[in-house]
Length: 250
Image 1 (cartoon, rainbow, N blue to C red):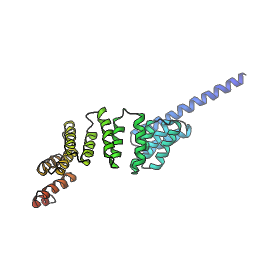
Image 2: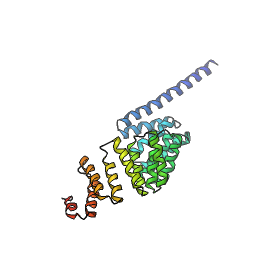
Image 3: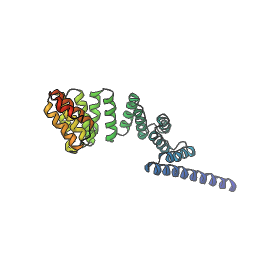
Image 4: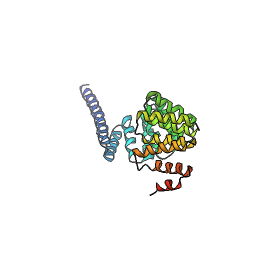
């Protein structure tokens, strides 16, 4: 009986040490990941899951490192390994969405992104990503609701305001689009994309002079902003000012 008790203590002690070692591997990998040393980080995450295949966080972190290293298919498998342990792990669903997004598999990315948002509906970035994915697929009405979810959580979320403006412009709602770009510019007066967006909305609405003024504001912030240069040139051509338009190419 005494020997059995000693053996039980040894087994328990070994189990505790193994768990601590697994946590160390994951912690060390996370430190290297934060330092952008992704290859060495991945080696530690591999050690962690080899030590304990049921350590869900290590699978997620492993997937993150593989995704950053552009090994997207392998990263997706790592995230799914995490989900086999915990099907409601929002970080794993989020990682799957990002990996599918990277390979432009937008329908699969949308399914995973939707699940991530469902599990963590207080993440403005999850709402934003869903909206952006729907926008990429031309599902504009649906994307508006997702951008609204992000903006409800953060009314100053300039990227969500901007992308919602792009969506409204795609729907032909130019006044709504301009209002959203203006909101984004209140948040960040140097947001050159919002000036460009507002210019494009005015341009599409036939207000060429006003559009040119917005393109000029974008170029004041970034004189090399090619999208604003091209858009300004098109506006000048539409105003029958070819010399001024082509002068921008010099």
